[in-house]
Amino acid sequence: MYATIRGDMVVAQATSAELKKFDIPAGYKNYAAAYCTGLLVARRVLKKFGMDEAFKGKEEIDGADYHVEDEENDKRPFKCILDVGLQTTAAGHRMWGALKGAVDGGLHIPHTNKKFPGFKASEEKGAEAEYDSDAHKEKIFGGSVKDYMEMLAEEDPTKYEAHFSKYIAGDIDGEKLEDMYTEAHSKIREDPEHELAEKKGITHTKGEDNQFTSSDGTEHVRSKKITLEQRRAKVAAKIAAAQAKLLAADEDEDE
Image (cartoon, rainbow, N blue to C red; front, side, top):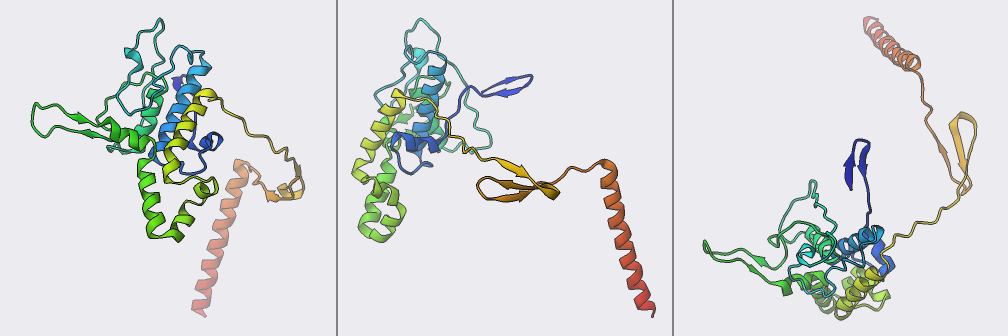
């Protein structure tokens, strides 16, 4: 997205709900889904501008640091800035998963790894910080979800079946999560295009008093815009009615 005098212009967008297309049946709010969404929007943007072949990003996902701008290329990479809005920039937040996915997808987004899972600040002054890329990789492939699934399946099978019913319907257990995300990453790279939803073709017929009847059988009333004079008259009528009510109450008390 970029700003113009006419307003903000959206280049491309992606939501985690689209991951169903890539055979991820549920869990669209976790870190792994955020990574996939970031990867999806990155590949979508690059394909839109014909840069997807020149900038393939990091195809081996291992959680390690990656900066597309460090690679030798005849073209400059597509640069953008992460706008976190009102989100709390806590370490390990899923927004960093979306950032990592977009970076691995081939976008140039200035960042450090200080907020990524696996980063550990130095305890002594002057010492180097530590970054465990394997810990980050585990989050990218849903490691925490896998642990919870396995714990719940063992301790409370009924709750497990209720919580992970969509995974169970797709024959996916904790051991298959990594393969599911690996396949999803490949499918995103193969076809990141956005599919427009089919129009329902519903028509609306206007009746009396702004009553509308739709072709699907539903009915609704739309408010009619009134003029300034009509609004003033409406307010004056309400004031007059309130005054009359108070006057009648005073007369009843006098009697």
